[in-house]
Image 1: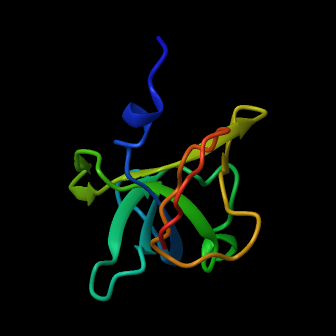
Image 2: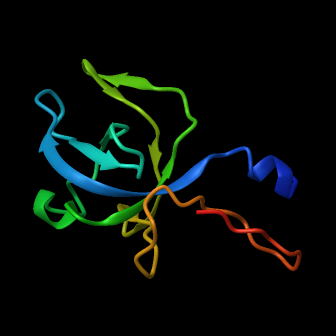
Length: 119
């Protein structure tokens, strides 16, 4: 299925930073507290990253986060949004900006049309 660039833009992808990580008491997954760049708007999400990362490796990393997804509850803990990853050897690998960028910056698709970036 092909989608239009306008449809892709409906996915609200943002740059965020992992502020804190703890283990989920039921599953052993990681519970991440992420800073999305707006004061008082930190979000929490649950992600199974334990095969790829130690908790202390994650703190301070900038990540790509899908903000406008339905929240889910993972064994009693609410997870708001999606963390974008790929995989290597069947283990998750974070998608991260190559350079430090402003938290909350929108992630967009880029083609040969002029794009107005807003931070």
